Image 1 (spheres, one colour):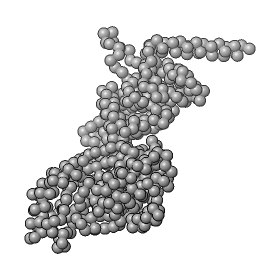
Image 2 (image 1 turned 135 degrees about the horizontal axis):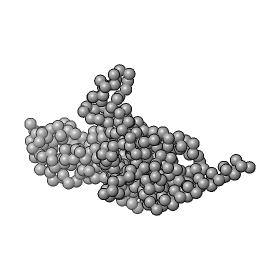
Image 3 (image 1 turned 90 degrees about the horizontal axis):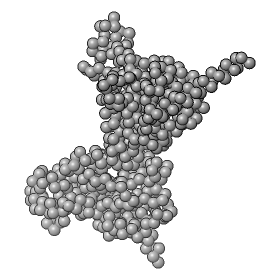
Image 4 (image 1 turned 45 degrees about the vertical axis):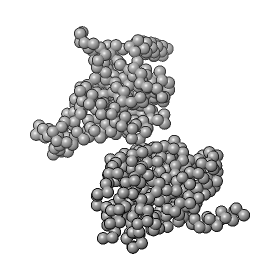
Length: 251
Length: 272
């Protein structure tokens, strides 16, 4: 039944599905995990870094990209599709600055990306973009924002979210652990992102790439040393928690 | 017959006065009432050079241009004052004394009219539509900078095609009071004080001598009113009534509409 309705995507299936869009969402689920967290004065993006081949230079594939000084995004899915979307978004950020004489709000650029994606679900001969994006940043009034888009062209605002492989596991972790205390300071928010990624990433800090935007500051990618330090802190805290639990049990 | 020969002979003047876009001039209108065609008439046209004298002069020259006007706007600590006259002339004929030269784009944005009345009102109504769509899409009011930029970009596409529009976009947004001068040449300038039209020089004289940043609302209104009055006193192409608006943080308010003759008597009394 499904096979007859996925050649031209402009066609609905009898039970109301757009199968190409759903297949695009499957492609997203195969991509490496990305997590986004909205703190009080900071927004954090973390991605799972795929291990590179021996001869490959490490830093050529970046999954976290700045769209403007105050907005950046991470994606999960087809890297080539993401490049197109990112390019269009960057141009739109500057066009907005030119016509409106103001930087974009995070919601505006998310809406633009989502509209772009939706257009590709309703044209002839084109397939949808195979990416989901997490867009973070600060509006010019200082409010931090996190939005997620998906291949169908919908977007929602989130306090914390994950996309890509094992996104469900990470999201459940975040639902349990995202509290006002856990994001009370910048450092705590960053550690929460790392903890969330450690749930699904295999070999610890080496395979995590982290970026933060603080209010009125541009995007900053954390160096691997800083990530290692934070991972070590998290491990220590975990051990202390485990110790406390043991003591509670024995008393 | 007589009319067409007059028009031909006037075409030499027409190109001469081209560079003065907004200082002098009036549309021809219906001066073929008989007396309008006298050779001594100063029929100045400030249409753009692209409309050569050989083009069909008839329909072009029937357009009523409001270069004979005085409009002014200035910023002060409590917002923006917008003051305009209300006379429309066609040659030496006063076509109307009650023209509305302030266009209410939306409850917090005003535009003034100088140049072609149709051009001004059409493009500013189009701007109002764009501003409303922006407001709906972005859930916040458009800034004065963005609104004036939209207008400037819209008319720039028609540059050289004969649009005649010199407008001041005035409003209050989150950056405070905003005042931009936009015209059909593609100029878009931010400023604290603008006067546009044939009477602008007289108005500038009055406002320049009386403008301080710490004016109260009444003082600023009186300054604007006085400036327009003085311009109508000396400029033949300005007159009628003085329409005064005040733009503040809550939007714009129509302050007053006063006949120039009444103001004249009032100021005469004050002198005594």
